[in-house]
Length: 434
Image (cartoon, rainbow, N blue to C red; front, side, top):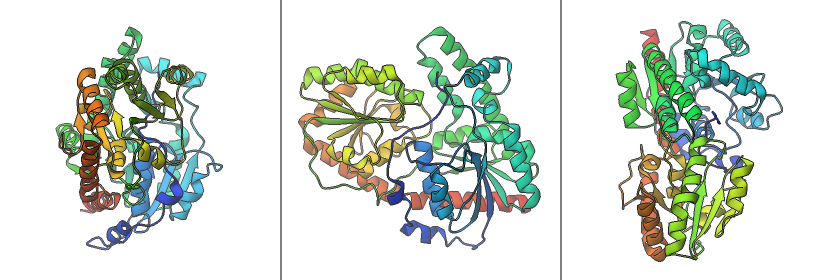
């Protein structure tokens, strides 16, 4: 079992960290107030090899020039991302790191969690060291608000005391656990994940109602947050760096397909195994020359060996820059069955002008129109048929890619998303003063 979270794979932080046109726009909010914001998170959001890191980094780089940000997380001074954070003007305060997710202490904690009312992703990240660090910071400085960059960090609400808190819910975590339980491969995992679903729903309901201010990624999750007691809910969608990720003008390699995702995250592993087992054989039966590239970080050895042993499949692994792999692909495949929020990898694919074939879960939360911006199918037969259609009709793939690019330019550039988060900060801080 892996309890970590992530979505997409890597781009070059140097290209993505330069100021953009959105920085100027964000810097001119209606009241010009400079906020002091304390952000609580699990790690420095670099390198950019997961969806959560990509989201956190891009929002920070657009808001750091306008507001005073202190970023409290687990980590060590040797992390090279520390310099990039400081270059944005962000002060980073580090707490000694947690035990790695493959250590005996990690699994011992998961076992002990069976008798706890807290979900394990909450109890694992709640430590005395982190609580002490919060106390020291708020005792010395006057922050306008606390931004909880992942829902489990709302467990520090008592430590934060009277400071207003905005919870950034990247997903409704209980939904993710429920879907994991549904697709768990054996009874012990199903039982464990079902218990985590109940615990997480209980924790999220209490946290949303108490914090009152919650930011979510999709409209469906906004409705859930309101039902669970949040008074002010802000729709801060996922986004994409449309300058960094744009069509190259190169012709794709014929018959080339791409799967990408952080393979230390269970939903991506499940999606890849589903693709290899149930979908790809149907694609190859109808179109024998089809080639699939798999780009992903930190796969289990067994999964990597499985990929490398398949005909017509190329294992690539983690890459410093995903753009050349997008450029070669006719289509990007997102056969997710588990997850929450929305998929940054789909926005990145569309920003590169690439056709996407996804499941309903893969495409949820995005304002895409099926057959206009992407193709959507849930059964292996329908999914494979859509993929073959694009391989045999590259002009159709180009049309989808062009429409997708127009959509992200219009609606999903990070500069637009950052303005919404900034307004959420202003309103959260102002509500406390009132």
